[in-house]
Length: 251
Ligand code: NDP
Image (cartoon, rainbow, N blue to C red; front, side):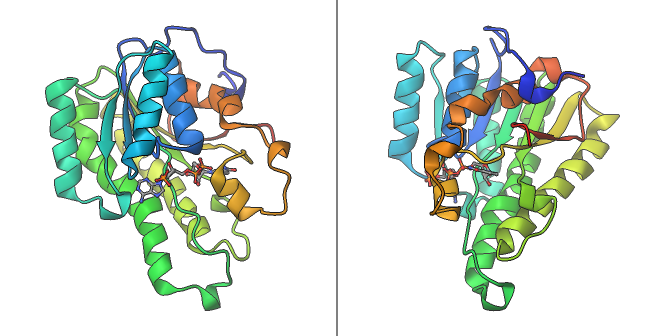
């Protein structure tokens, strides 16, 4: 099997494919949306901040990519009604969905569990874990309408080994690894949908700078530099690869 982080994507890898990216307005999600469009995908840009999504939309058009779709949704509010309506819109206007990159997340407080505010816990779990479940479930009809499709969840090193003070964020990423494994197992013999996790590794984004304020930001790669694994997992070259959890960078 190809090592995802070493993959070299052909220029037209995603031509004719429709891919939804959550948290597409900033950081890794924005870089992924731009990379997917640069490889031919029509990207559904989902996020809570319309101006940021519009900036990403403009950047995709300026680079000559297919016209994207903007979907404003605060994932804290993601429910069956909102996500079901999105599924109906995608089926009506695009026909089907070839991939979802679940990328949006909240860091939340970095504090001992004894002091962790319960309301913030609920917010982090809502955005990082509940929303990917609700959104995936609602979008299954659009995914099943594609000849093959890929669901990519975003994990983290602290979702594989717990670490002090990472609170709900770490727990949500453990949950994401579990969600991905359960769904992959359920879909393996009943569909052509593959399901995997990607861990971006330390990447120069607002979240990383918030988590490690003392770190030199440019010691970590910019999001554009870690796209190989994302392109591999979202695109058709990863057909047959399911239930895995991969690193976008060498450890
Ligand atoms: P950023 O904070 O830079 O970007 C997060 C994105 O998620 C933003 O676009 C943000 O929107 C969006 N988002 C947050 N909350 C919501 C919400 N309620 N509804 C809709 N969108 C929301 O983070 P990164 O780019 O660094 O992180 C991307 C993913 O990678 C995350 O899953 C993160 O856990 C993971 N990760 C990142 C690492 C790193 O070093 N950067 C390391 C390991 C994992 P808005 O622009 O409105 O704030």
